[in-house]
Image 1 (cartoon, helix red, strand yellow):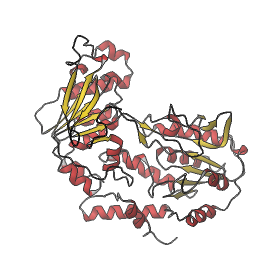
Image 2 (cartoon, rainbow, N blue to C red):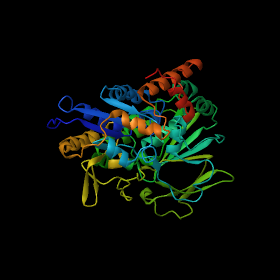
Image 3 (cartoon, rainbow, N blue to C red):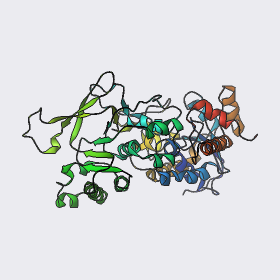
Length: 454
């Protein structure tokens, strides 16, 4: 990957999700030519980031990548430091003192808003917050969720919108095979929701769904899928001009629209509509949609171009956004850290020992595997500049842990994660399930402390 150098390189990787894990993998591939040790600093007591808390629980095939990441993060040259938050528990000054170089792979943790009346009503949530809730994220903003209505609306045309729609209509048998917390399972199983409307501002050719996700909807038990007639109006010429993945996705949508009807629950695809308001008291009761210019029906009156869908649950899936981190430059327009091939750029100064990867680097685009190429680019740039890094003053690996403990931080090592892992499997066994996530931070820390003595 790069020319070997003979000094020992101490690296901090901030974040243990896909981009962080792939950065570690790329660093390990430089062995044995490079003498290297990596500390993975994670704000939660548990690793894996988006794979654990962003992937839909019924996607066990994708979540199996956790096994690969586990091998990477438990490597003898890697140390996991969980429950350590950058900016509060550990600072940039600390990183410079204890490490030769730092890679920030923290992801994008906030969401974009619609900016419409009624967006703050009870029953209206960002899809990302709903995902965090059903995945048992310890910092989930949704504490209590009342599913009392028969209809839900999901705003957005990406795979996250499909994930949340699918979770709302999945049958009990499917949910029992997931690792969602028990209170989430019980609420979803007892949900009265019968209809989920997926609404997109643009047309099917602009949707960001993947074909695999669309095909999966046709395999749901006791669920019909209805498709906006505009999908059938896409011409062969338009399909030929579209990128092959898009053409395949639209073809899959057409197939869904031809499947038999008459099942208990339904998912509806609606294109060329944008939400303009949510109404209800005290919470959401309906969503007002307006036809967009793309529907090619300009003869309608403004009133006729609007429609209302009754919905007691509204989920908005219009994109993730990274937030600024202390001591790092930030482009507020792109919501990314300025960089050159991953090397952080601050005005006229390219910081030699600070790098960035993942969504914080390129924005919230791509699938999990996209992060491998992205992380490889960052690590290549890092290794090519390694001789220029100022040497960390503190070379003792134990010093940073001592510092954190002095600050009252309960550091969770890899053995602590293994203890949490075992506790979740045991909880599942007691409930007749393969695994049940622990969703409370205090319980995660308690479970981690039951690890074997160091």
